Amino acid sequence: MIYAIGGNRLFDKLTPQIILDALTGKRFKEKRTMQLTAIAHKLNLPFFPEGDDSLLERLNHFHLLSQGHSGRIWNMLHGETNNVE
Image 1 (cartoon, one colour):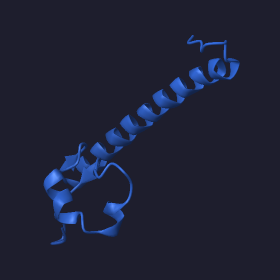
Image 2 (image 1 turned 90 degrees about the horizontal axis):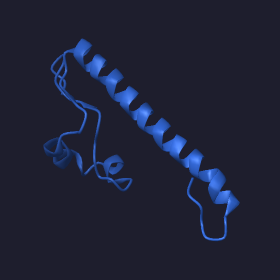
Image 3 (image 1 turned 90 degrees about the vertical axis):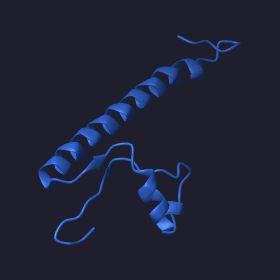
């Protein structure tokens, strides 16, 4: 356990929760990536877990992609089906 100077009890109680939240979030992201991989396979579409920077450059003028701080796309399915890209 990490102790702050002066024995901050609040910090002692929050540290395990912060670690648990971080691990749970990571597991959720991994599970979502696995599910999207399976969907992409069923749809016969390419899947880019780390995104595709060349496509991001083509889409960066859309308002939605100008939001947030990362400026990245991940877990992206991209392809053409029924003549629609």
